[in-house]
Length: 277
Ligand code: ADP
Image (tube, rainbow, N blue to C red; front, side, top):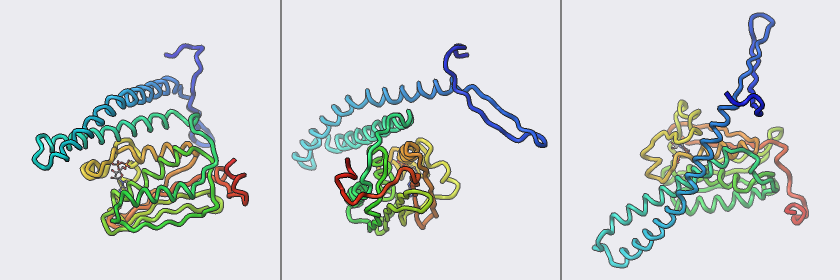
């Protein structure tokens, strides 16, 4: 139905057909792509528009909560104010994640290409994870300090934050979280976040990166999850031409491995100034 002279996107597939024959299937997917782009634009615009009113609401709720705290436990509206503020925070997290995902889905054209000091970024993300865990988990880091990566800082930051936050969320107190950044000969760079948490059943693993898919909705919501974290990780990794491997066993723990292709990694030069220029 699109105009004849408009640029079209075709999908080609070759499949075996009978003996020694092949079938070429050509599909015009232009319309589907246009609809996808319209959906992404709508989500991005709606999320963007929702941010300002939410910021205003939260600002006032912050002030009201501080006021109620100063007045003590008998302050009128103390509990509803705290609950409204919690819900505003949840909505803010959701709107921010929706915006991030819509931007990532719109393609790699927007990823900035720079040389990333992954060891420093991993170290910072582990520190943030420690703060979030509040002493409830043991953290270990195994970082190849000379290994760097080409790509976008925002995208790598999203990957690290989401995986480490999930490890904290889904690991009971007393468990361990291990983050590693190493080179795998022939494969590229590997960023791993492993935990000794609740684990995931095999049948759920393939669906984890779907938007809003949660194994346990109650647990995810209670811990502040938006249900979009792993979709964000998957799309951010695609921008690096990387892939996500998930291994898990219920009651034992999970390992999320991000594999970055060899052409994206490099070694730190002996002169640090050259490495960052
Ligand atoms: P959420 O905001 O719900 O954590 P995610 O997209 O980040 O959303 O994760 C999707 C679901 O995958 C979670 O709701 C949870 O059920 C499961 N999950 C993610 N990370 C882990 C983990 N480290 N251990 C166990 N389950 C996990």
